[in-house]
Length: 246
Ligand code: G1P
Figure 1: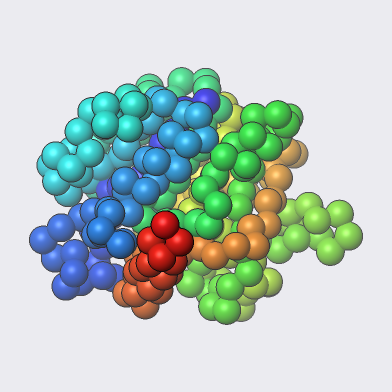
Figure 2: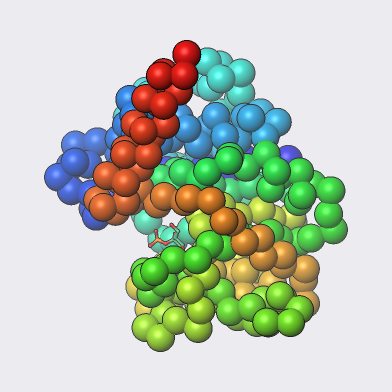
């Protein structure tokens, strides 16, 4: 399997913290979120990692380098305009080939890492695995409606005004080569982006196996200021607990 990290956004929701710096490089407990994402992927046994970069490419490349420090190989993929998560996948096709891959948004942190998720996907016949978690404010995210009996996905909708459930799509996705047909079939959304949510809906509509994994631990999308503060609090609490224990 390969890893794909999306690190192209401008981080406008975190201004002024990110005015001069990439949002993925803002430290959470002294360590940039992006480094935590690289480590989570490495810990899941994946060494071949692509990072999609945008306007802040120079800063990201300088901070992350070749990946040697984590014993992984990093390939940078330039996204000239922020045209959406599915667009970022599209421009990564040469790097990914027909391998299965995990895609991780570079500003997301989840409890427990992703090793278990990767193991489940690798040993399955799923074409795609998505990660869902219950949230209080689903309209801010992509949202999934599941069949209450079979737990299969009925539909996925990006930032719905009237959310069909409280299950948000976490920024971690796993795909096989079926994703190529889907990212080429979809059209830009109302916000002018090729949405990964629409590409996954396309897979569901075409009858591919899309498995919804419901994550019960904490999840922090650090792209928002209140979430960023929350992330700093948990990591501080965790590191101070750890240092008290040693
Ligand atoms: C993106 C996805 C959305 C997902 C979210 C998780 O939203 O489009 O479905 O729930 O990441 O962080 P965006 O950050 O583009 O608003």
